[in-house]
Image (cartoon, rainbow, N blue to C red; front, side, top):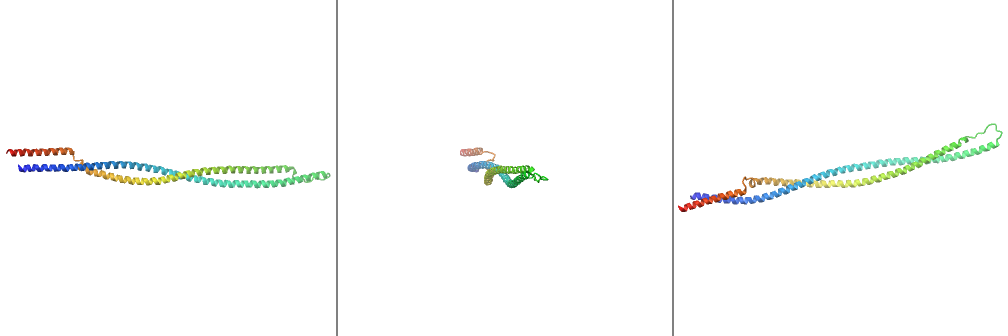
Length: 277
């Protein structure tokens, strides 16, 4: 009986030690599981937030890069148009200047020719009148030149002179209009280029800035994902001893208490039986 009593007492002590150990382990598990859950929740939320930021930055950079490409093309097209317009204007200016110069020279030459012809025909007319009044018995008519056609020649030269004057006026007017049109085009183009260049500078700097932020965000995401993975791995290690026992802690405590009570009751019965003996 003594051996049986001792065995029962040892078993009760062992069960109580296990209860104390499990109680301590339960406290440790509760602490570790609580901390781990908080870590997993926080890191999962951070990963979600950082992932969204990476997606937004990637989309923004792509769109801004497209804007940079489009603006660069537009500026290049403006430069090309201004260069072509300037080349055409220079050629047009030279041609108009040559036309005006030729017109002025032609008018000068025609004016001089008209003076000579008018003087010649005037003298010829005076000489003819004198001959006709004094020569009443001439055997043949004297040479009178082309006095009959003089007015026609002079008129034709005057018309040509007027045509050159009209050409000069039209050319000068066309040149003035061309200059005004060119200057307006260049002014509009320069304003547009200035605006596009400012926008290009801003967007280029924005792409560089956003790319730096994206790189840092990606690094933060990678670090946070590593921390989340570590928390998940630790949670898997906690499961066997803290969660996946098959029986809840409360049930194990209740069963152990029942077993200890039964053993103590057995000891009491054996002690009473020994006393009666």
